[in-house]
Image 1 (cartoon, rainbow, N blue to C red):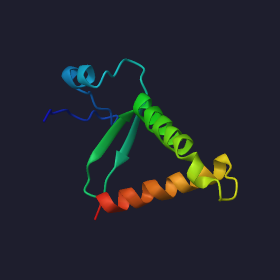
Image 2 (image 1 turned 90 degrees about the horizontal axis):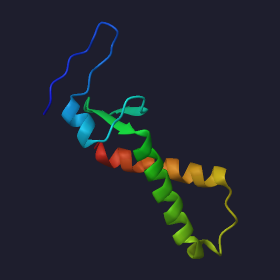
Image 3 (image 1 turned 90 degrees about the vertical axis):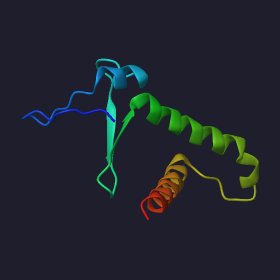
Length: 94
């Protein structure tokens, strides 16, 4: 586990080894998520986009099972995805 300090402006410095391992570069956007246990999770914009791409691929690849269902627009798919993410988050935070 690496150690870092919070500045008076609320800024932190990620250790160089962590930045290298996670391929975080100057100017990269990080998403911050806090868990119920007080754990902070950082994700790069690339990771968030990869997750989105994975979900889109899964929907596309399983599209045939939806043929008997009403057509779904992007809004309905996003709502379903948000519901699934909340359910998974709830499972992890039990």
